[in-house]
Every structure is written in structure tokens, then in C-alpha cells.
Image 1 (cartoon, rainbow, N blue to C red):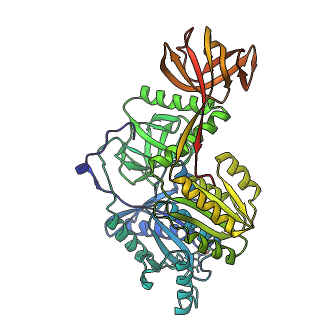
Image 2: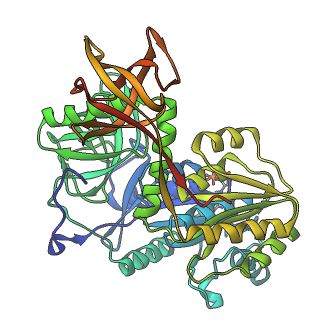
Image 3: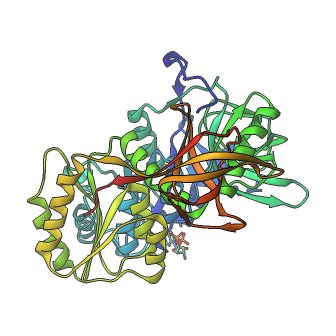
Length: 518
Ligand code: GDP
């Protein structure tokens, strides 16, 4: 996005919707994806399916629809956390012989957090005795309880009966998706330099790095220079989902590209840039950043990012994930929380469920800046580790009014999200050492407070701030140290900055984000 000019309003043209299928294990996600893909092969008479690239496009009524194969809702949300919000509509698969199951509830939460419309595929409808009024209305009831009120019941969620086995209802499903897509007027500008998302990537023998990408804006062509994550390269070849060589790919078109120099992560965005030199610059800068980021620095950056993301999206809702020991506890907690409904800061419950706090809950919390509330339940080991890493708050309770008390405080606190700078100390530069492969190291004397390795710094020259950044290395003689107090000498290397001079002042500070801490 930073590489391409903003699209002119009249350059926008309709683009195909991008669909992700989510649901409980064994309810038929894979079978349904396969069945839909086969409907295309029959139509185009192009013979067997030669290649599966994790995404494909079919045509319904002359309108293309793109399907993305995401391995579960965790991956769906993990991609979203990277900034890859590729999905326009979620198809929630619910097996008619099983109904709403724990992972269905999770999938609903993940789709809702992504704020995309949900269409339910009531699958396996071919199984004898499941397409009965009693069974269907039982499942409608389960859906309604999760906030998905079927159209048949006066709600706004389309429920389409399908069978991945017989193909029954598949074209109804496609028709429904097309209608919803039309309603949302999805548009893109095919004429600008292409941007999009990497869905998956690997190294293939003889072909180098191959990446499945989804074009979002513009048109990607063979010969284009792309930057993707911290990789770059010239697009050597483009293939469609059946492995046919193509020379260009427009908006919402999934394709496979070769020519990148390193394997990007799934969810990484790509952009076409003017020339290889520029691409290399961007990619190398990103590589350095990834490599050099020290743990402590990362921590600060994460907090800052969190704040920025909140500010950017103007998040003005308190997102909660509520896990409890029994259904009764959940109902009691929700009832109490409803009493707190505050006009200025709505409380959004992204997920409520019975059971321990899982990794999947933490992933959802991370992508949606939510707080996890555990009532008489414990987090799994891996959830604790991940919550620590991602700085996600897990709050545990065994008394209901304490939950509501804390949530109330959080809502009040949220009205003034704040970022606070804490001054740590100052050092004056006495001498500059230029060390090959390292750069300029400033020999300093700490005149006030303390310089911390994890601090952010400002470089002040003749009373003016000339640079802001972080500390790459802090040394006492030859040793790396965590901090250096007043009246001591130290060596400071500022990350990515070498223009330091004698008499410059280095000011160290810490950034605290006052978040919605309960
Ligand atoms: P996933 O885990 O959600 O991807 O589920 P799969 O697509 O792997 O399907 C799980 C099982 O259900 C497989 O044995 C499928 O053959 C079966 N299955 C999937 N869809 C249908 C359907 O519409 N009808 C019937 N009878 N079986 C189905």
C-alpha cells in the first residue's frame, strides 16, 4: 500500500468475493471445498485437477468466486493478526447429524471477530433421517444461541442445506454467496500495481521459492518486481490453481508465483514495486529489522503496535473471551456483564465457552485485542506460554462479582487510552568509535538517571532532537550490560544510526502503554 498511489474512485471495478470455509472437525470442510472445485472442472471440461494450491476460483452464473483453503480457524485468525484480512465471507460448515459443536462455537467467534458475514452450510443433509423438521429446528436453535439467527426464523443468517457427498445444495450455496457478495459491492482497481497476500509458500525442487498468493488490488504480471515480507524478486512464472501457466492475475485471483528469493510466511502481504534495487532495499531493511530486534525492544514495539492498532481502528469496544467451568457459570457472567452495557464503550463477547483456556483462545485474543476471562478454569500450558509471548492478559476468577467489578473498571479505564513516556536517564557522548561491520559506537558518560539496554533513545544535538530510535548494544568495556547508572561510562550503539558526534546527548526513555488492564 505504501508503494502504490491511492485508487481513484472511478477506477474501482467489481471483484470476486473471497470465501473461507470454517467449522468443527469432520463436519465436511475439505469435502465441500473439493466438491465445489469439482463443479468447476465439469463446467470447463478441462480434465483432471492437476494441482492444488490452497485456493481456487469457480464460476457461478458467469461470476467468479474465490475459495481459500485455510487449515482451521486458528490459521484464519493468525493470518488476520498479520494484517491479512483476505476473507469477505465465511462459510460455516455444520454437520446436520452432529449440530453445533465446540469448534463450531470457536469458528463463529473467529468469523465474528473478523467482522465478515457468515453463511451456514448445513452439511451431510444426505444422511438418512437428518433432514427432519425437528432436527433442523434443533440446530437452528443452537445457531441462534450463538448469535446466528437463521433467515427462516426472522434473522439474517442464510442457512443452506448441502451434501458434499452428493453435491446437493452446492449450487444453492454458490448462489447465496454470489448474492451476498453483490450486496457488499466488493471492488478493486485492476490497473494499479498489484498488492496482495501470500497464502502459503515453500521451496520446490528445481523451481526455487513458490508462493501461493491472492491478488487483492491491481494486476500481477510475469516480470513484475515484488516485495513479499522480507523476500523479493522478479515474478518468473505465474500459474493458476490448475497449474496452467498464465501471464497475469487480477483482483481476488489466486495464483502461484516463482521468483522470490526467500520463503515468505503465510499472511505476509506483497506489493509490486518499480525496480529491483528498490525491492532489495525494502527487503533487506526488513531482514535487518527482524534479525536485530532485541527481545526487550520487541516488547516495547509490541506494546506500541498494540496502541497504534487500537488508535488506527478506533477500537472503542472492550473485547472479551469468556471461558468457564460450566454453561450455568457462563450464563450468570453474561447476565451480569449485560448490566454494564455502557453507551460509550460497548462490551463485545467474542467467544464464550465451557472448558480450559486454549492456544486458540489466545490467538483470537491477540488478533482482536481481547482480554481472556477464565472462571474456575485454568489455561493450558501452551496457552500460558503464548499469552506471555504475545502480551495477552488472562484473568482468572472464582467469584462472579469480581469479574463484573474488574470489567467495569476496564470499561472506565478505556475511555482514556493513553501512551506514557517515562524518562530514564541521559548520557553525553565523549568520543565516537567507528568499528567495521558494527558502525558508530558512542563512548558516553551517564550524566543523569540510568541508561537501560531496552530503552528507546533520542539523540539531541545542540538542543535539537535529530534522531529517535532504540539501543542496539550497551556495553561496559567489553561486556554487554542491561543498564548503566549515573556517573559511569558506557558504550552505546544506536540501532541503524551511525551519525553520532561528540557532545551529542543521548536521552533514554521507556514507553508505557496504559491499556485496558483490568
Ligand atoms: P473436515 O474435517 O471438516 O474437513 O471434514 P471432511 O471433509 O474431512 O469430512 C469428514 C468425513 O465426513 C469424511 O469421511 C467425509 O466423507 C464425510 N462427509 C463430508 N461431507 C459429507 C456429506 O455431505 N455427507 C456425508 N454423508 N458424509 C460427508
